[in-house]
Length: 350
Ligand SMILES: [Zn+2]
Ligand SMILES: [Zn+2]
Image (tube, rainbow, N blue to C red; front, side, top):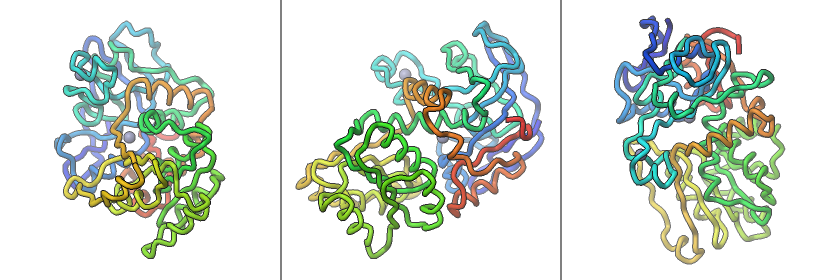
């Protein structure tokens, strides 16, 4: 079968690899759609400490069960999405129900081959723990594949507790930023502002009809725009949805008193440092949170929102491409000319 194999920084090659065979307890899935994640892009651009050469990336996927060597009740031909974190189940964090923090977790596309391929094997552990979820007929595989990134967004919102009292600023108008902004709206935010450097990205995001679209500039014109939108108070919640250290520092300035600030996503591993103005944290009594991956409960909620049509996943997809063109997705994402790009390794059956 064809798979996009990671060989190292800036080196992903689509090649013929052995067709996977499954063992007892495993499930074989024919991949209909695998969306490209910002994490895939970061791994491509900078490498990743826990991903070895030879690994197949891709973890935001939906596919059709073609072989089932387990008794999980799924029939051949049914479509499914997967919660990709495989927790140990016994460490302190697993006991606390925060399986994304498991000290001994494995993850699809990091420790097991992922879904930038025609077929993917669902590991026995995930099958046993019931981590496959059915996709109803009226939901496309491309939309269903977005359950994974939406779950990561919901994980962050679990601690932000946005209500109708909140004016929310989201920095970064990529697909994750838009997911955050949509989630804030869904949770009743009084006002949602989307901030972004690229005018092209802001224009693409206009179809979502957020309250304000504000261009981030070097001269910091966006500071005045946020103050104006908030009657001079600043944002109650600032979500930094881009991998830029300067944007994290800037978030403290956009924040009003007692604001909650979320640093969503990681920084490049070769330079993960941010310099923050500690006095802004002190005088404004700011709370800063980070978030990583998602708990199973977040994934369950995300897939439910998508499968019931409560979350407009389809509207986030701007491109559907064949597996051979996977590296084009990285270029489009870097240029900011796309939102979600879905790879369809078996053609347009999704
Ligand atoms: Zn992802
Ligand atoms: Zn654990």
